[in-house]
Image (cartoon, rainbow, N blue to C red; front, side, top):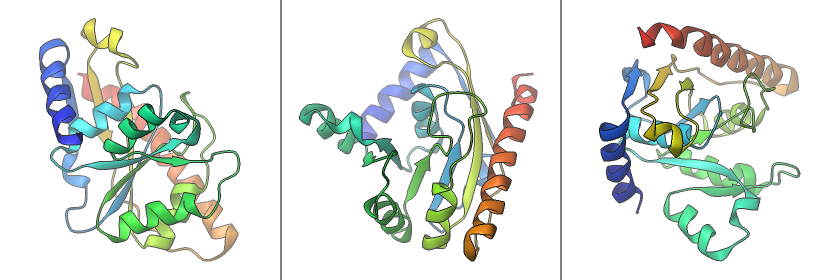
Length: 196
């Protein structure tokens, strides 16, 4: 289902909009890794997915989206898995760590909300540290919904350099989280340059 819908998304974006990705070479090719991106709407999920094709991303999604069986089945077919954001348990960490150790890509929106410059949570750094994989910070700007795609609003994705994560203790974890937050915000500020 992922590959099929990915091809449809590529076609739609070619017809109605365009996607420009800068620094695609920053994505590791020989290991699993986390993509950590700002989150402004569901189209950033589509944009990141298209940017990495044919490689697939496993996205963390809030558990409320999985309450209905048909929707849950559809989301799982797109490699999404549920996370309880209010009460994150061990499964919130075990699933992505397992995927990463298998060499897969996990997409996380560290702010956990669809708004600009929201506080960054520690989940991405914690998971990367346990799985011993890098985090690649990214910034997205463009349409936030399908209506804006139809209005031919362009998608821009700026990919930062991979961050090596190896921390011990809460203080180091918080420092790395602050560093990730800073890098994502810097990419959001820089992204205007790729529009030119």
